[in-house]
Length: 62
View 1 (spheres, one colour):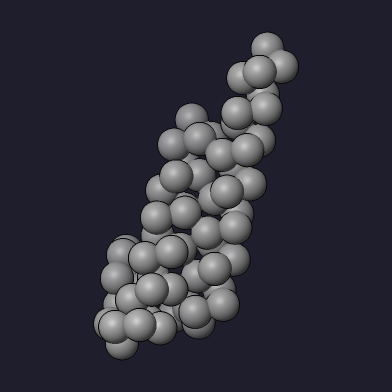
View 2 (view 1 turned 45 degrees about the horizontal axis):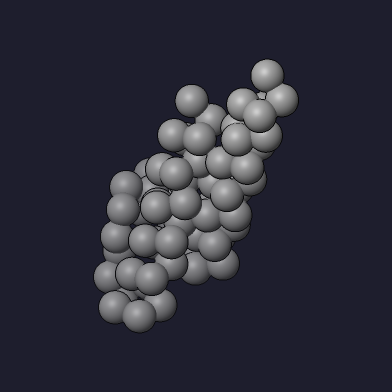
């Protein structure tokens, strides 16, 4: 489940960043609830990567 949420966070973070920086548009769902800067979108993507790594490590440990 962590991996799934991590992948969603990575997609939302990278999509929001690319949309704001390169296309001057709002992509994804996060902009509907929060007003985030491009740096915050990168932080969301980093949290998503962390979730994916954490979930994968938990699977390998079990």
